[in-house]
Image (cartoon, rainbow, N blue to C red; front, side, top):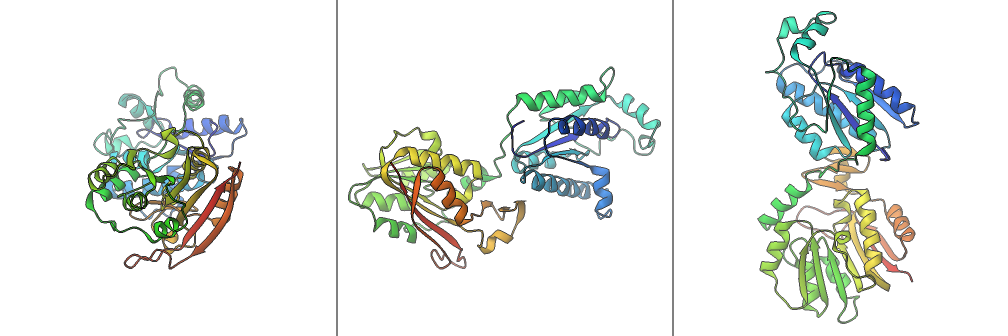
Length: 380
């Protein structure tokens, strides 16, 4: 449990013991010294002034509201425990895609036991029935706890703690694979070289060995290759790499699927790493890994060319909030603070040779983003 923040969603049918187990888990986690926030679905519905009804669509939407709040708190280093039913296939899939470090714990309790417990408290089963038609039992929970019989709340909570201690936090794709595969298949992006590629090309010495990270449709990689450089274009989208290979063929141009850290390129083997509109398309931990891989692959004195969206970009205030600097507005973006990127570069063995933040650098249609352009030099 060494993650900076995480969401533990304890779910189950009514009267399965969610609140009791969550209260116990909250106590056990606090004893470890971790910053804990415990949120209960019934309390949240009340705090939100019962603005949503009880139809399926209302229940799904309020479930996502709960989990968006949990995710936002987790992005700031909190371990968030949520006890709420929210058992809908749409919500389960959404958590998988958009809640990094999310763990779904399903408390499984037989119907007759739930009815027995409920008869001693809220007596809602007598009004509703067995709830099987109202909710979707989670098919892909990370952990199933049979919370009945001789299993106490302490036992159930201990199982959760043990699971968290031996399991790495699940990564969320944030919808990126689906979006970029679909985008690259449509040929929506311009095929002419970007303005940034043209600027970088004017600064390169002849016959450089260059890696284009996140090469997309290959337009910039093809420009560099046409100028006599030896270019490797890398992109995690299988569709993008296939289309690049079909569109551009040259002996000094290679396209491979994946990320820069995954390639295992020889240390100090390249003169330049080119990274346009890529860092803002990945979470911070992936950026840090990319900076480290760039420093490894560059020879001393090699240059790292970066262009990415700034936190001052208008899109930084649009779309669904994931964290203070992450949004989903048709797709995932993390908007960068220039001083923070510079600091990470310097900590990673680079010297910042030039740094610029401005609009008007890459206007396309009605989009005039606020961009950061940095050239960093690999130090010996």
